[in-house]
Length: 145
Image 1 (cartoon, one colour):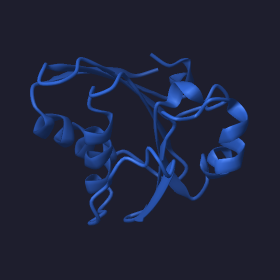
Image 2: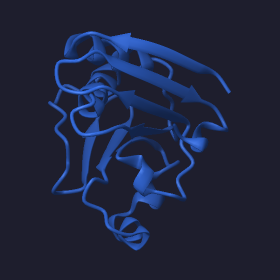
Image 3: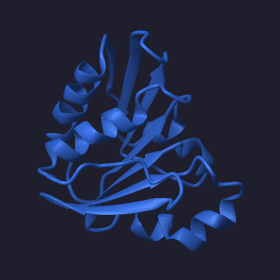
Image 4: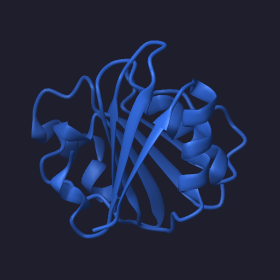
């Protein structure tokens, strides 16, 4: 399983890493984002969206749980921060979207125990601190961070 490690020193660098990562995304890919509050998950997701050619500003769907965007592929952006149990994921259609004719980005992916992502992106750091970002790719990415 390929693993790459990065250190970003600003939101702009985190955004650029997301854009670069998007170059390798294809239909059916699931990107699991794992990290604490303020660790850079949404900024990275914005970079992924830009890299997929999405012109609309990506915002975190914390209260709606899912936002969809159209770019090179349809993008389904989930935020599972408010999820309390696995059954809620069925109701919001997470498992129906994951692996479909789209790309799924899932913030707080640790709440989806049955998820098998193509990429698992783990964030350490918060606020104005540097971020350590580890990207796991491949069939074992579901082992998480």
